[in-house]
Image 1 (cartoon, one colour):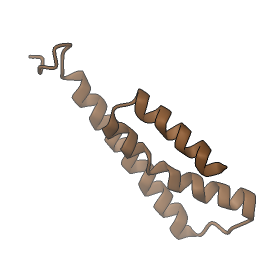
Image 2 (image 1 turned 180 degrees about the vertical axis):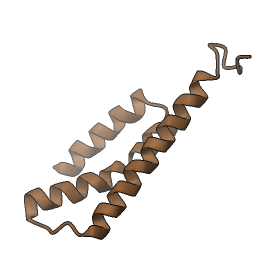
Image 3 (image 1 turned 90 degrees about the vertical axis):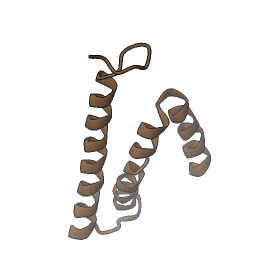
Image 4 (image 1 turned 45 degrees about the vertical axis):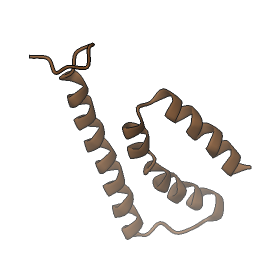
Length: 82
């Protein structure tokens, strides 16, 4: 059931976002997995998992900033503005 919900949600995401942004944000599912594993199954969150989750979030933020900066330098015709 969860996989079906994920698949439907993923289809909605790639329909509404550019593919490069959607795939970069897909890495956040690892962070959600850590969170829900702790909440639902009582799994322990180690320092290594926290560091890994922080690295993933930092990577997604850096990508989003770079993507936003690139989008700001392109005009409506898809050509770089001067």
